[in-house]
Image (cartoon, rainbow over all chains, first blue to last red; front, side, top):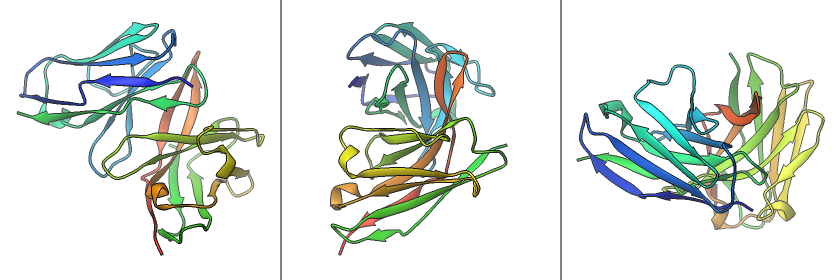
Length: 107
Length: 120
């Protein structure tokens, strides 16, 4: 099974800050990596797929990069609605697996 | 636009079987993968497994011995059964559609989630 590890687990930042979240896979997953955003009490929403492709309707301040075992999600200028928990997920093989999440909080 | 809705008991007794249904509206259940994912309070997401409309399944090995998934295309529904539950199975349970976009699988549609507690 593929283990996904995110860092940091939590992050405090201010509006207009640039933030980067890292996700590492326990083995190479090529670009089979997706990112989701989850707000309290809501289901996750797809942000980025195939490591770097922006899902329809997602603001361009979100970007993803990486391949193999190392991936990043960057938010170029934080907006108030971006404070949420972010999860990476590998779709290279089953069982599907998620990172433990990164909670982005307002400083 | 496809929408998903989970339904089922919110309280299950220890050692009994948790049963949930996911109803698909706004589109056909055919030709996609349908997954169950759970999230204990304050914790991360755990993939339970998926079923294709043909009935073929993939389960998480950590739960495989207790999980059964089925699909009813005539009702546009799929279901989850988790047997011998314990308090550790208390979680919000989501159903989700997994689709293939070019060469990439993604969970593109999610239900709102249903809270299931295991307690006597």
